[in-house]
Image (cartoon, rainbow, N blue to C red; front, side):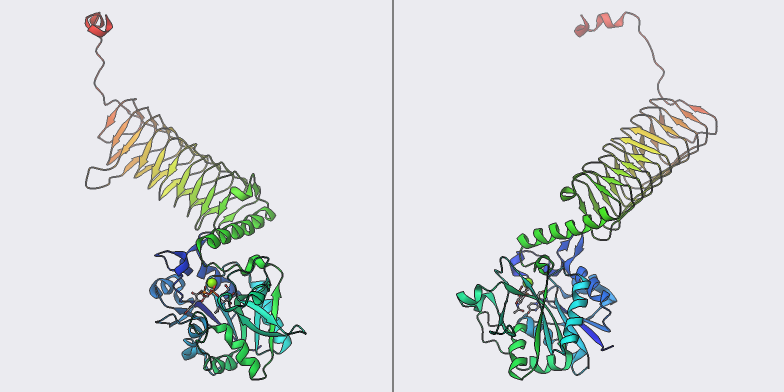
Length: 457
Ligand code: UD1
Ligand code: MG
Protein backbone atom coordinates (compact mmCIF):
# COMPACT_ATOMS: atom_id res chain seq x y z
CA UNK A 1 0.00 0.00 0.00
CA UNK A 2 0.98 3.58 -0.69
CA UNK A 3 2.59 5.17 2.42
CA UNK A 4 0.19 7.33 4.40
CA UNK A 5 1.11 10.41 6.40
CA UNK A 6 -1.03 12.75 8.46
CA UNK A 7 -0.65 16.40 9.39
CA UNK A 8 -2.83 17.74 12.20
CA UNK A 9 -3.23 21.52 12.25
CA UNK A 10 -3.27 22.64 15.84
CA UNK A 11 -1.33 25.88 16.04
CA UNK A 12 -4.07 28.47 15.52
CA UNK A 13 -4.82 30.82 18.38
CA UNK A 14 -8.51 30.13 18.54
CA UNK A 15 -9.20 33.83 19.02
CA UNK A 16 -12.94 33.36 18.54
CA UNK A 17 -13.09 31.04 21.58
CA UNK A 18 -12.19 34.03 23.84
CA UNK A 19 -10.37 31.61 26.06
CA UNK A 20 -7.07 31.21 27.86
CA UNK A 21 -7.28 27.53 27.05
CA UNK A 22 -5.76 26.77 23.70
CA UNK A 23 -8.55 25.99 21.20
CA UNK A 24 -7.77 22.39 20.28
CA UNK A 25 -7.53 21.50 23.98
CA UNK A 26 -11.15 22.44 24.67
CA UNK A 27 -12.91 19.21 25.58
CA UNK A 28 -15.73 17.58 23.68
CA UNK A 29 -17.36 14.89 25.82
CA UNK A 30 -14.39 14.90 28.15
CA UNK A 31 -11.57 14.66 25.61
CA UNK A 32 -9.64 17.57 24.08
CA UNK A 33 -10.65 18.07 20.45
CA UNK A 34 -7.16 17.30 19.23
CA UNK A 35 -7.25 13.95 21.02
CA UNK A 36 -10.42 12.97 19.17
CA UNK A 37 -8.60 13.90 15.98
CA UNK A 38 -5.48 11.86 16.68
CA UNK A 39 -7.61 8.86 17.72
CA UNK A 40 -9.40 8.93 14.36
CA UNK A 41 -6.18 9.60 12.45
CA UNK A 42 -4.44 6.64 14.10
CA UNK A 43 -7.31 4.40 13.00
CA UNK A 44 -6.33 5.13 9.38
CA UNK A 45 -2.84 3.67 10.07
CA UNK A 46 -0.51 6.44 8.90
CA UNK A 47 3.21 5.72 9.01
CA UNK A 48 3.93 9.18 10.38
CA UNK A 49 1.85 11.84 12.13
CA UNK A 50 3.05 15.43 12.36
CA UNK A 51 1.11 17.85 14.57
CA UNK A 52 1.63 21.55 13.94
CA UNK A 53 1.78 23.40 17.24
CA UNK A 54 2.08 27.09 18.10
CA UNK A 55 0.57 28.89 21.08
CA UNK A 56 0.49 26.51 24.02
CA UNK A 57 2.66 24.09 22.05
CA UNK A 58 3.95 22.43 25.21
CA UNK A 59 0.42 21.70 26.42
CA UNK A 60 -0.63 20.10 23.13
CA UNK A 61 2.58 18.09 23.10
CA UNK A 62 2.07 16.83 26.60
CA UNK A 63 -1.52 15.92 25.71
CA UNK A 64 -0.55 13.83 22.68
CA UNK A 65 2.87 12.69 23.88
CA UNK A 66 4.71 10.18 21.77
CA UNK A 67 1.77 9.61 19.49
CA UNK A 68 2.92 12.34 17.13
CA UNK A 69 5.92 14.25 15.87
CA UNK A 70 5.70 18.02 16.31
CA UNK A 71 6.54 20.96 14.09
CA UNK A 72 6.47 24.41 15.62
CA UNK A 73 4.69 27.19 13.79
CA UNK A 74 6.08 30.11 15.76
CA UNK A 75 3.83 32.65 14.05
CA UNK A 76 0.33 31.75 12.92
CA UNK A 77 0.35 32.93 9.34
CA UNK A 78 -2.44 30.68 8.11
CA UNK A 79 -3.31 27.05 7.43
CA UNK A 80 -1.00 26.85 4.38
CA UNK A 81 1.90 28.20 6.40
CA UNK A 82 1.07 25.67 9.12
CA UNK A 83 1.39 22.77 6.67
CA UNK A 84 4.73 24.16 5.42
CA UNK A 85 6.15 23.55 8.90
CA UNK A 86 5.81 19.80 8.38
CA UNK A 87 8.33 19.95 5.52
CA UNK A 88 11.25 18.97 7.75
CA UNK A 89 9.55 15.61 8.34
CA UNK A 90 7.68 14.90 5.13
CA UNK A 91 8.97 16.91 2.17
CA UNK A 92 10.06 14.73 -0.73
CA UNK A 93 8.56 11.51 0.61
CA UNK A 94 6.36 9.40 -1.64
CA UNK A 95 2.84 8.73 -0.44
CA UNK A 96 -0.52 10.24 0.46
CA UNK A 97 -0.87 12.88 3.15
CA UNK A 98 -4.03 13.50 5.12
CA UNK A 99 -4.25 17.09 6.34
CA UNK A 100 -6.83 17.56 9.06
CA UNK A 101 -7.79 20.46 11.35
CA UNK A 102 -7.55 20.08 15.09
CA UNK A 103 -10.97 21.69 15.50
CA UNK A 104 -13.22 19.18 13.70
CA UNK A 105 -13.66 16.58 16.46
CA UNK A 106 -16.67 14.77 14.99
CA UNK A 107 -15.05 13.33 11.89
CA UNK A 108 -15.11 9.53 11.91
CA UNK A 109 -12.38 7.19 10.74
CA UNK A 110 -14.86 5.63 8.26
CA UNK A 111 -15.14 8.99 6.55
CA UNK A 112 -11.35 9.38 6.53
CA UNK A 113 -10.97 5.90 5.04
CA UNK A 114 -13.58 6.72 2.40
CA UNK A 115 -11.67 9.89 1.60
CA UNK A 116 -8.39 7.95 1.15
CA UNK A 117 -10.15 5.41 -1.05
CA UNK A 118 -11.84 8.05 -3.18
CA UNK A 119 -8.55 9.91 -3.57
CA UNK A 120 -6.76 6.75 -4.65
CA UNK A 121 -9.61 5.68 -6.95
CA UNK A 122 -9.59 9.03 -8.73
CA UNK A 123 -5.80 9.06 -9.02
CA UNK A 124 -6.07 12.63 -7.72
CA UNK A 125 -3.26 14.94 -6.63
CA UNK A 126 -5.57 16.44 -4.05
CA UNK A 127 -9.00 15.46 -2.75
CA UNK A 128 -11.02 17.80 -0.57
CA UNK A 129 -13.41 16.36 1.99
CA UNK A 130 -16.58 18.40 1.54
CA UNK A 131 -20.10 18.46 2.97
CA UNK A 132 -23.43 20.01 2.17
CA UNK A 133 -24.30 22.65 4.78
CA UNK A 134 -27.76 24.12 5.20
CA UNK A 135 -26.03 27.11 6.76
CA UNK A 136 -22.53 27.36 5.26
CA UNK A 137 -21.64 30.64 7.03
CA UNK A 138 -18.03 30.72 8.15
CA UNK A 139 -16.79 27.85 6.02
CA UNK A 140 -14.80 27.89 2.81
CA UNK A 141 -17.06 27.21 -0.22
CA UNK A 142 -16.32 24.69 -2.94
CA UNK A 143 -16.56 26.27 -6.37
CA UNK A 144 -17.11 23.84 -9.24
CA UNK A 145 -17.15 24.53 -12.97
CA UNK A 146 -20.18 24.03 -15.25
CA UNK A 147 -19.55 20.27 -15.48
CA UNK A 148 -19.10 19.92 -11.74
CA UNK A 149 -15.31 19.68 -11.56
CA UNK A 150 -13.73 21.44 -8.58
CA UNK A 151 -12.21 24.76 -9.48
CA UNK A 152 -11.13 26.24 -6.20
CA UNK A 153 -12.12 26.98 -2.62
CA UNK A 154 -13.15 30.47 -1.61
CA UNK A 155 -13.08 31.56 2.03
CA UNK A 156 -16.15 33.23 3.54
CA UNK A 157 -14.31 36.53 3.86
CA UNK A 158 -13.19 36.51 0.23
CA UNK A 159 -16.45 35.26 -1.30
CA UNK A 160 -18.68 37.35 -3.56
CA UNK A 161 -22.34 37.34 -2.48
CA UNK A 162 -22.99 34.84 -5.25
CA UNK A 163 -20.17 32.53 -4.15
CA UNK A 164 -21.43 32.78 -0.58
CA UNK A 165 -24.67 31.15 -1.75
CA UNK A 166 -22.85 27.88 -2.38
CA UNK A 167 -23.71 25.27 0.20
CA UNK A 168 -20.94 22.79 -0.43
CA UNK A 169 -18.30 23.56 2.18
CA UNK A 170 -14.67 22.67 2.80
CA UNK A 171 -14.38 20.53 5.95
CA UNK A 172 -10.69 21.46 6.30
CA UNK A 173 -9.64 17.86 5.69
CA UNK A 174 -7.82 16.77 2.54
CA UNK A 175 -5.73 14.05 0.96
CA UNK A 176 -2.72 15.16 -1.03
CA UNK A 177 -0.01 13.56 -3.06
CA UNK A 178 2.74 14.32 -0.56
CA UNK A 179 5.43 15.39 -3.00
CA UNK A 180 3.11 17.67 -4.98
CA UNK A 181 1.76 19.20 -1.75
CA UNK A 182 5.13 20.47 -0.58
CA UNK A 183 6.05 21.70 -4.05
CA UNK A 184 2.79 23.60 -4.41
CA UNK A 185 3.09 25.14 -0.92
CA UNK A 186 6.07 27.13 -2.21
CA UNK A 187 3.73 29.02 -4.51
CA UNK A 188 1.27 30.20 -1.87
CA UNK A 189 0.85 33.91 -1.24
CA UNK A 190 -1.07 36.05 1.23
CA UNK A 191 -3.10 37.94 -1.34
CA UNK A 192 -6.50 37.59 0.38
CA UNK A 193 -8.85 39.25 2.82
CA UNK A 194 -7.06 37.89 5.88
CA UNK A 195 -3.49 38.33 4.60
CA UNK A 196 -2.76 34.68 5.41
CA UNK A 197 -1.26 31.73 3.61
CA UNK A 198 -4.43 29.75 2.92
CA UNK A 199 -4.01 26.02 2.49
CA UNK A 200 -7.16 26.17 0.40
CA UNK A 201 -5.26 28.03 -2.37
CA UNK A 202 -3.27 24.85 -3.05
CA UNK A 203 -6.23 23.61 -5.06
CA UNK A 204 -5.95 26.41 -7.59
CA UNK A 205 -2.18 26.05 -7.74
CA UNK A 206 -2.40 22.33 -8.50
CA UNK A 207 -5.11 22.91 -11.08
CA UNK A 208 -3.09 25.60 -12.83
CA UNK A 209 -0.34 23.03 -13.07
CA UNK A 210 -2.71 20.66 -14.85
CA UNK A 211 -3.13 18.34 -11.87
CA UNK A 212 -6.26 16.36 -11.13
CA UNK A 213 -8.16 17.67 -8.10
CA UNK A 214 -11.19 15.87 -6.64
CA UNK A 215 -13.78 16.44 -3.94
CA UNK A 216 -15.39 13.75 -1.84
CA UNK A 217 -18.64 14.80 -0.19
CA UNK A 218 -19.62 13.20 3.13
CA UNK A 219 -23.30 12.54 3.67
CA UNK A 220 -23.39 13.88 7.19
CA UNK A 221 -22.61 17.58 7.59
CA UNK A 222 -22.57 17.18 11.36
CA UNK A 223 -19.34 15.23 11.14
CA UNK A 224 -17.52 18.17 9.66
CA UNK A 225 -18.57 20.75 12.22
CA UNK A 226 -15.60 23.08 12.77
CA UNK A 227 -15.36 24.52 16.27
CA UNK A 228 -14.33 28.15 16.13
CA UNK A 229 -16.39 29.56 19.01
CA UNK A 230 -18.26 28.36 22.07
CA UNK A 231 -21.57 28.12 20.25
CA UNK A 232 -20.04 25.52 17.95
CA UNK A 233 -18.32 23.89 20.94
CA UNK A 234 -21.69 23.33 22.63
CA UNK A 235 -23.08 21.97 19.39
CA UNK A 236 -20.10 19.62 18.98
CA UNK A 237 -20.67 18.35 22.52
CA UNK A 238 -24.34 17.78 21.79
CA UNK A 239 -23.64 15.85 18.60
CA UNK A 240 -20.89 13.77 20.17
CA UNK A 241 -23.13 13.04 23.15
CA UNK A 242 -25.88 11.86 20.83
CA UNK A 243 -23.42 9.56 19.07
CA UNK A 244 -22.01 8.16 22.33
CA UNK A 245 -25.42 7.55 23.92
CA UNK A 246 -26.75 6.00 20.74
CA UNK A 247 -23.92 3.47 20.79
CA UNK A 248 -24.53 2.65 24.48
CA UNK A 249 -28.22 2.07 23.76
CA UNK A 250 -27.30 -0.30 20.93
CA UNK A 251 -25.05 -2.08 23.45
CA UNK A 252 -28.01 -2.67 25.78
CA UNK A 253 -27.88 0.30 28.15
CA UNK A 254 -31.20 2.03 28.97
CA UNK A 255 -31.53 5.78 29.20
CA UNK A 256 -34.62 7.51 30.54
CA UNK A 257 -33.67 10.67 28.62
CA UNK A 258 -30.54 10.32 26.47
CA UNK A 259 -30.50 14.02 25.61
CA UNK A 260 -30.03 14.83 29.30
CA UNK A 261 -27.38 12.22 30.10
CA UNK A 262 -23.74 13.23 29.82
CA UNK A 263 -21.23 10.48 29.14
CA UNK A 264 -17.63 11.10 28.22
CA UNK A 265 -16.04 9.46 25.22
CA UNK A 266 -14.33 6.27 26.35
CA UNK A 267 -16.62 5.44 29.30
CA UNK A 268 -17.64 1.76 29.31
CA UNK A 269 -21.12 0.62 30.44
CA UNK A 270 -22.43 -2.95 30.69
CA UNK A 271 -25.73 -4.19 29.30
CA UNK A 272 -28.99 -3.89 31.28
CA UNK A 273 -27.73 -0.88 33.18
CA UNK A 274 -30.27 1.93 33.55
CA UNK A 275 -29.16 5.54 33.61
CA UNK A 276 -31.46 8.32 34.73
CA UNK A 277 -31.43 11.96 33.57
CA UNK A 278 -28.82 14.45 34.69
CA UNK A 279 -26.16 11.79 35.21
CA UNK A 280 -22.54 12.60 34.34
CA UNK A 281 -20.14 9.73 33.73
CA UNK A 282 -16.67 11.12 33.25
CA UNK A 283 -13.10 10.22 32.43
CA UNK A 284 -11.99 6.62 32.76
CA UNK A 285 -15.21 5.42 34.35
CA UNK A 286 -16.31 1.82 33.84
CA UNK A 287 -19.83 0.70 34.85
CA UNK A 288 -20.78 -2.97 35.00
CA UNK A 289 -23.94 -4.77 33.96
CA UNK A 290 -27.36 -4.43 35.52
CA UNK A 291 -26.59 -1.30 37.52
CA UNK A 292 -28.94 1.58 38.25
CA UNK A 293 -27.51 5.09 38.32
CA UNK A 294 -30.19 7.49 39.47
CA UNK A 295 -30.78 11.12 38.56
CA UNK A 296 -28.02 13.71 38.99
CA UNK A 297 -25.27 11.27 39.98
CA UNK A 298 -21.73 12.21 38.96
CA UNK A 299 -19.19 9.45 38.55
CA UNK A 300 -15.62 10.38 37.69
CA UNK A 301 -12.68 8.06 36.93
CA UNK A 302 -14.29 5.22 38.88
CA UNK A 303 -15.05 1.54 38.51
CA UNK A 304 -18.54 0.35 39.33
CA UNK A 305 -18.98 -3.42 39.12
CA UNK A 306 -22.19 -5.35 38.29
CA UNK A 307 -25.55 -5.05 40.08
CA UNK A 308 -24.66 -1.81 41.82
CA UNK A 309 -27.09 0.99 42.60
CA UNK A 310 -25.77 4.53 42.81
CA UNK A 311 -28.51 6.83 43.99
CA UNK A 312 -28.00 10.51 43.28
CA UNK A 313 -24.43 10.58 44.54
CA UNK A 314 -20.95 11.83 43.67
CA UNK A 315 -18.27 9.19 43.11
CA UNK A 316 -14.67 10.17 42.35
CA UNK A 317 -11.67 7.90 41.68
CA UNK A 318 -13.30 5.09 43.61
CA UNK A 319 -14.28 1.45 43.24
CA UNK A 320 -17.72 0.05 44.04
CA UNK A 321 -17.85 -3.75 43.92
CA UNK A 322 -20.73 -6.00 42.86
CA UNK A 323 -24.04 -5.75 44.63
CA UNK A 324 -23.12 -2.69 46.70
CA UNK A 325 -25.40 0.31 46.91
CA UNK A 326 -24.52 3.92 47.44
CA UNK A 327 -26.64 6.92 48.35
CA UNK A 328 -28.82 8.83 48.14
CA UNK A 329 -26.55 11.84 48.54
CA UNK A 330 -23.36 10.00 49.36
CA UNK A 331 -19.93 11.27 48.39
CA UNK A 332 -17.19 8.78 47.57
CA UNK A 333 -13.98 10.76 47.40
CA UNK A 334 -10.73 9.47 45.91
CA UNK A 335 -9.66 5.98 46.96
CA UNK A 336 -12.93 4.85 48.43
CA UNK A 337 -13.35 1.12 47.94
CA UNK A 338 -16.81 -0.20 48.64
CA UNK A 339 -16.79 -3.99 48.63
CA UNK A 340 -19.42 -6.55 47.62
CA UNK A 341 -22.93 -5.97 48.94
CA UNK A 342 -21.84 -3.15 51.22
CA UNK A 343 -24.20 -0.25 51.82
CA UNK A 344 -23.17 3.39 51.98
CA UNK A 345 -26.27 5.41 52.67
CA UNK A 346 -27.66 8.91 53.08
CA UNK A 347 -25.19 11.77 53.47
CA UNK A 348 -22.19 9.55 54.02
CA UNK A 349 -18.72 10.68 52.92
CA UNK A 350 -15.98 8.10 52.35
CA UNK A 351 -12.39 9.01 51.54
CA UNK A 352 -9.29 6.84 51.18
CA UNK A 353 -11.10 4.06 52.95
CA UNK A 354 -12.21 0.48 52.47
CA UNK A 355 -15.77 -0.49 53.39
CA UNK A 356 -15.67 -4.30 53.58
CA UNK A 357 -18.07 -6.85 52.14
CA UNK A 358 -21.58 -6.60 53.58
CA UNK A 359 -20.66 -3.67 55.84
CA UNK A 360 -23.29 -0.97 56.35
CA UNK A 361 -22.66 2.72 56.86
CA UNK A 362 -26.21 3.92 56.61
CA UNK A 363 -26.48 7.55 57.62
CA UNK A 364 -24.65 10.82 58.15
CA UNK A 365 -21.15 9.47 58.69
CA UNK A 366 -17.62 10.43 57.69
CA UNK A 367 -15.30 7.53 56.95
CA UNK A 368 -11.85 8.93 56.21
CA UNK A 369 -8.56 7.01 56.15
CA UNK A 370 -10.04 3.80 57.51
CA UNK A 371 -10.16 0.11 56.73
CA UNK A 372 -13.45 -1.52 57.66
CA UNK A 373 -13.70 -5.31 57.50
CA UNK A 374 -16.76 -7.42 56.67
CA UNK A 375 -20.31 -7.26 58.02
CA UNK A 376 -19.71 -4.29 60.26
CA UNK A 377 -22.56 -2.05 61.29
CA UNK A 378 -21.68 1.62 61.52
CA UNK A 379 -24.47 3.55 63.24
CA UNK A 380 -25.75 6.99 62.40
CA UNK A 381 -23.42 9.97 62.61
CA UNK A 382 -20.15 8.13 63.21
CA UNK A 383 -17.03 10.17 62.54
CA UNK A 384 -13.66 8.64 61.79
CA UNK A 385 -11.57 11.51 63.10
CA UNK A 386 -8.51 11.21 60.91
CA UNK A 387 -6.77 14.57 61.10
CA UNK A 388 -4.87 16.02 64.03
CA UNK A 389 -4.27 19.35 62.33
CA UNK A 390 -0.99 18.23 60.83
CA UNK A 391 -1.21 14.60 59.79
CA UNK A 392 -3.80 12.06 58.68
CA UNK A 393 -4.10 8.87 60.73
CA UNK A 394 -5.73 5.55 59.98
CA UNK A 395 -8.39 3.50 61.74
CA UNK A 396 -8.83 -0.23 61.33
CA UNK A 397 -12.10 -1.97 62.24
CA UNK A 398 -12.25 -5.80 62.34
CA UNK A 399 -15.03 -7.99 60.89
CA UNK A 400 -18.49 -8.21 62.54
CA UNK A 401 -17.98 -5.21 64.79
CA UNK A 402 -20.83 -2.95 65.79
CA UNK A 403 -20.30 0.78 66.14
CA UNK A 404 -23.13 2.66 67.79
CA UNK A 405 -24.48 6.00 66.68
CA UNK A 406 -22.64 9.28 67.23
CA UNK A 407 -19.29 7.66 67.91
CA UNK A 408 -16.08 9.59 67.32
CA UNK A 409 -13.11 7.39 66.55
CA UNK A 410 -9.91 9.36 67.04
CA UNK A 411 -7.27 7.79 64.80
CA UNK A 412 -4.92 6.04 64.94
CA UNK A 413 -6.98 3.33 66.54
CA UNK A 414 -7.60 -0.36 65.99
CA UNK A 415 -10.99 -1.83 66.79
CA UNK A 416 -10.62 -5.60 66.68
CA UNK A 417 -13.15 -8.02 65.24
CA UNK A 418 -16.48 -8.80 66.96
CA UNK A 419 -16.26 -5.83 69.26
CA UNK A 420 -18.92 -3.33 70.13
CA UNK A 421 -18.69 0.43 70.64
CA UNK A 422 -21.41 2.07 72.70
CA UNK A 423 -23.32 4.93 71.14
CA UNK A 424 -21.96 8.39 71.90
CA UNK A 425 -18.45 7.13 72.70
CA UNK A 426 -15.28 8.97 71.84
CA UNK A 427 -12.74 6.25 71.16
CA UNK A 428 -9.08 7.06 71.61
CA UNK A 429 -7.62 3.64 72.45
CA UNK A 430 -7.52 0.27 70.70
CA UNK A 431 -10.37 -2.13 71.47
CA UNK A 432 -9.61 -5.86 71.85
CA UNK A 433 -11.69 -8.59 70.17
CA UNK A 434 -15.14 -9.27 71.67
CA UNK A 435 -14.91 -6.23 73.99
CA UNK A 436 -17.56 -3.58 74.54
CA UNK A 437 -16.05 -0.11 74.65
CA UNK A 438 -17.91 2.69 76.39
CA UNK A 439 -16.18 6.03 76.41
CA UNK A 440 -18.58 8.66 77.63
CA UNK A 441 -19.54 10.29 80.95
CA UNK A 442 -22.01 8.32 83.04
CA UNK A 443 -25.52 9.70 83.15
CA UNK A 444 -26.67 11.46 86.28
CA UNK A 445 -30.39 12.05 86.95
CA UNK A 446 -31.08 14.89 89.39
CA UNK A 447 -34.52 14.31 90.82
CA UNK A 448 -36.99 17.24 90.50
CA UNK A 449 -34.21 19.53 89.27
CA UNK A 450 -36.09 20.46 86.11
CA UNK A 451 -38.64 22.28 88.24
CA UNK A 452 -35.94 24.77 89.26
CA UNK A 453 -35.01 25.70 85.72
CA UNK A 454 -36.71 29.03 84.99
CA UNK A 455 -37.77 28.23 81.43
CA UNK A 456 -39.34 24.98 82.57
CA UNK A 457 -41.69 26.84 84.89
C1 UD1 B 1 -10.62 26.55 7.70
C2 UD1 B 1 -10.58 26.58 6.16
C3 UD1 B 1 -12.01 26.65 5.62
C4 UD1 B 1 -12.80 25.46 6.16
C5 UD1 B 1 -12.74 25.39 7.69
C6 UD1 B 1 -13.33 24.08 8.17
C7 UD1 B 1 -8.55 27.74 5.44
C8 UD1 B 1 -7.96 29.00 4.92
N1 UD1 B 1 -9.85 27.74 5.70
O1 UD1 B 1 -11.20 27.77 8.15
O2 UD1 B 1 -12.01 26.62 4.21
O3 UD1 B 1 -14.15 25.55 5.74
O4 UD1 B 1 -11.37 25.43 8.14
O5 UD1 B 1 -13.44 24.02 9.55
O6 UD1 B 1 -7.83 26.76 5.59
N2 UD1 B 1 -4.19 26.66 12.20
C9 UD1 B 1 -2.82 26.56 12.36
N3 UD1 B 1 -2.03 27.62 12.03
C10 UD1 B 1 -2.54 28.76 11.51
C11 UD1 B 1 -3.94 28.86 11.33
C12 UD1 B 1 -4.73 27.79 11.67
O7 UD1 B 1 -2.32 25.53 12.83
O8 UD1 B 1 -1.75 29.66 11.22
C13 UD1 B 1 -5.03 25.51 12.59
C14 UD1 B 1 -6.05 25.85 13.65
O9 UD1 B 1 -5.52 25.53 14.94
C15 UD1 B 1 -7.22 24.95 13.32
C16 UD1 B 1 -7.07 24.74 11.81
O10 UD1 B 1 -5.77 25.11 11.47
O11 UD1 B 1 -7.12 23.70 13.98
C17 UD1 B 1 -8.08 25.56 11.01
O12 UD1 B 1 -7.90 26.92 11.33
P1 UD1 B 1 -9.12 27.90 11.59
O13 UD1 B 1 -8.59 29.24 11.92
O14 UD1 B 1 -10.08 27.28 12.51
O15 UD1 B 1 -9.72 27.96 10.11
P2 UD1 B 1 -11.22 28.23 9.70
O16 UD1 B 1 -11.46 29.68 9.72
O17 UD1 B 1 -12.13 27.37 10.48
MG1 MG C 1 -11.87 26.25 12.20
